[in-house]
Length: 508
Image (cartoon, rainbow, N blue to C red; front, side, top):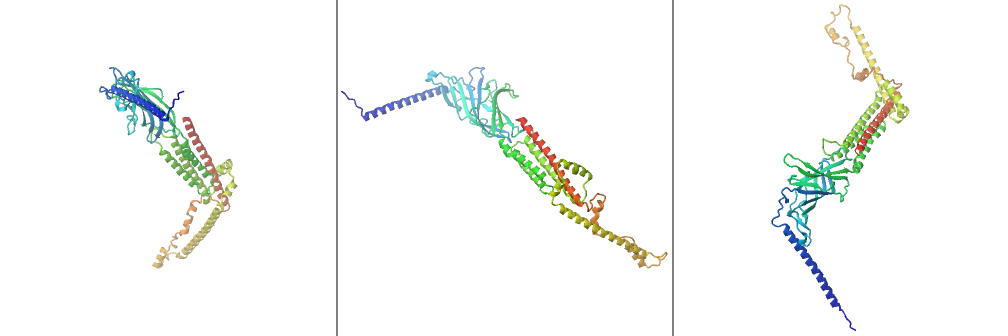
């Protein structure tokens, strides 16, 4: 019996030899692929091929370019500058009759990749592009794929910035439609035609934006006739529709504005004796001005369209101004109690008798809430007593001066014909004596105190007996007017809100 043995050294040598043969075969195959590709490249791009000549082989042939785009991302929308920034994958397809070969002559190789500058490429331009790096940045940085039948595919990514007419009428519930037109800049329809590969762009790889929601991106072919040229120019227009997500603006701007404007109602619930009624309304007015400035920084200064939300903030500011005026009128009525005049009869009838019942404002409650009535009553009573005492003193003084004047006149009247016998000095003294001549001295400064009283003497004024009642009526009237203004303001505020909700819901 024969035993065949394999030593570890012989096994290792056999394995290394087998591995060397495999690697050598791969290298030979790789060298063959390189050689074949190099031969194909040399055949295609020999001295007769020119990248500057339109690749048409027939006399009346027209170059057909298929344009397609895949929307990758909406990067930014600048409403103030009316620009749109997108990331696109542009896809161009055409047929170059000079780049045709038989795959069987090159080991069945039916495709080759070449740099952009090695082949003729169409001058496809984004007409509305405003980027400083070109209409389609990055177009010359990639490679084209060439097939054996002469079909050329050139796909490249590009971040484009295009002009877009932003309509901010219904900001932040707006829907924007932007047009991206692609076409040849130099070749007219006689030599080059562009076609859309489908009725819409590819959005399968779209990355969602936090602020903008993609609605659609359709495509269509448009033919234009220009005055400069004899033949028409064709273009592919992609119509992009995006809608803004309003949640951020609702939470940060609209809701705070509504909340701050609602604080004006607190001013109506403050009693008229509170001096902070107008201060609160002015503070709310300043807050609305701040919100309006925030909106202004984000909107374009367009004269064609004006945002509805700007009207909303403006109307809110007008409402707050109206509330300030109402508060001023209430305070004016309230402080008329210090005049001491009675409430006009018509105001008593309309406000104190009828409207007070409609608004459920009780006379006793108004007086109980006002702690300054007693102080005002004491002040008016003291002023009235001082006025009476001063008037009595002045009346007594005037009577005394009149009696003294009459007495002096009576004593100084001479007998008939005795005036000539009087000494000259006596006559002079008589002529210069104001009392003798009847020219009384003017009243002193105390008489000016009653100037207003003489002017108002025809007006109805309260007697000291019902002075406290008159003060209470003015306080009651101020509360009724305040409640009337509150009702009127609430109706205007509610109407304003309903109008703007209807406008925004109609757009949605």
